[in-house]
Amino acid sequence: MFERLQSKYSSECMVRYTWIVFGAVACGTATATVLGGTSPWGMSLTVIMLAGALAATAVARLMRQPTESPIKKARLERQQLEQERFDHDLVARVHELVTEREIDWLRHEDFDGAWRDTPVSSLRNLKRSDALASARFADDLGEAVARLAGAINGFLDYYELNTRPDDLLTGTDWREVGPSTTAGERPDGLQPPNRVQEHLVERAAAVTRAYDSLPSLQPAAKHPAAGRTRA
Image (cartoon, one colour):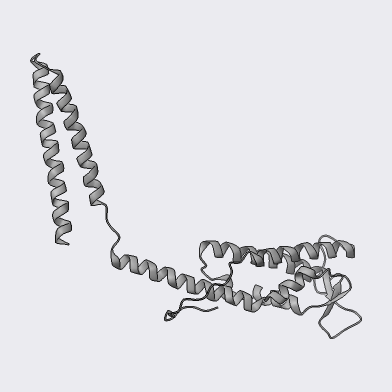
C-alpha cells in the first residue's frame, strides 16, 4: 500500500514539474516573440515540452486507474459460482419435469387417431412451475427458457382447444382430435381434422426445438453454497 501511494505521489509530482517547465519555456518564447527576438529553437523547445507534459499527464492518469481489489474479485467469483449452481439446478428441474422421453414422443407423434395424454401432462406441469417462471437465470439461459415456455404455451393453448378425450375410451387418458367440450365458443370456428393435426405437429416441433436449445447440463460445483434456491 505504501509503495502504491509513493508511486502515485511521484507521478503527480512529475506531471506538476513537467507543466511548470513547459509554462516557463512557453512564457519565455512568448516574451521573445513580443520583443521580436523569437527563434526556431525556442518554438521547437516549446512544442517538445508540450508533448512531454501531455505524455506525462497521460501516464499519470493510467497509473491512477483503480485496480480491482482482491475482495471485490473474490466476491464476483463467488457470485458467478452461485449463479452457475443456481442455473444448473433449474435446468435440472426442467429436465426432471419434461424428460427426453416426452420430447421424443413429441418429435414422432402425428396426432392421427388416438394417443395417450400422459406426455402432454408433463408440459402442463412445467407450465405451472412458479419457481421456473420467477427464476433469475443468466442472460443466455433466461432467453432459452423463455423460448421453451413460449413454445409450450403455444402448443398447450392449441392442444386444449382442438383435442378432447376419446369418445370410445371414456374414463381414460386417451385423446383425439376434436373440439374441446370445455373450451366454450370457438373464435375461429371448427377446423378440419387434418389441419388440426398439421398445426399440432408444427407446435410440437417448436417445443422440441426450444428444448434442444437449452444448454447441456454441466456438473454442478463441488462445494455447495449455503442457502441456495432450488426449484
